[in-house]
Image (cartoon, rainbow, N blue to C red; front, side, top):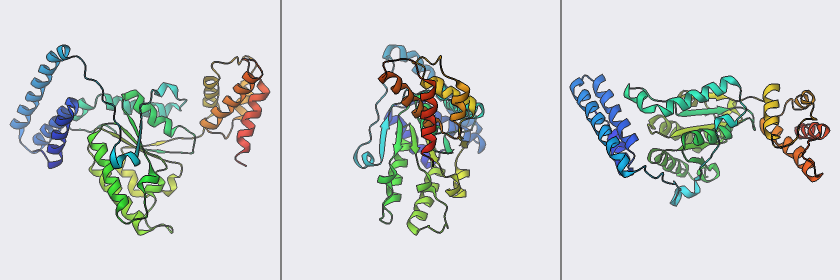
Amino acid sequence: MATADQVKALIRSHADGDDTRFYAIAMQVAAQAARSGHGKFAQELRELVDQVKARAKEVEPVRGPKAVPLAQPRGELAGLLTVSYPKTRVVDMALADVLRTRLDRILNEQRQRDRIREHGFVPMRKLLLVGPPGTGKTMTAAALAGELGLPLFSIQLDGLITKYMGETAAKLRLVFDAIQSTRGVYFFDEFDALGGERGSKNDVGEIRRVLNSFLQFLEQDESDSLVLGATNHVGLLDRALFRRFDAVLEYTLPTGDIAARVMRARLGLMDTSAIDWGAAVKASEGLSHAEIAMACEQAAKNAILDHSTAVCDTELVLALEERRGTHA
């Protein structure tokens, strides 16, 4: 039978007018009832949901499409979340084939989440993104939101983590309440500040309690929102975090082929006929996607300031080498 959380979720989705979520939870209840031996009730509930869906489709052309509400954090949440509505798409990103395939699978599961839930399963929605800075983790959050037409909520860790005992956990509860009530992509950047390994030399009691609270909230979360954590320092994360996420996506520095794709895309509006791409790719070795893009912008602006649309081969290589110099 329905759990207390499912009953509350049904009421919330009804109050929000979120029919898709309402039907999905009802089907979860039916699947759970079937597993518990209440086959007749499960079948009746499935048939009832199908009837209501069919009626809604008949009425929908008369009512017209629902307006998509613009979510805006208010009250205490205003200091914990910022919201944006990205137009980014996965196709805009220069990704390794393996990573692109995994993102496509996540999107496919999200788009068909009702079918998956009808059979008693849950679509992937809790994702951990790991890898060096500038390799596409933040852009991935934007692309997932853009592909699914969802708001992107970025969690402000400076507002979340405080020095006062218990206050951070209380704020974290507010964030997870928002995750439950408003479907979106919720992005915890620099996640190691929150999910650092318990028992480390720098561990303090309050941070340990915060991590324990996060693990509990994440495990209990059964919403339709996507929850993303991103870190540049995967070695600092507590091992218990990994099994709470549905997938761990690994980001690496670009290969030569991907570096060339980043450069060609960023310089797409410029004349690049004079560029020796082999030399440019060699100069880009060791740089992240973001650093390569910044070097391309610098070379393009140099051309524009010289009243030209042609990017100079030497300027691009020099800009790439300057970016590498910042690592020294």
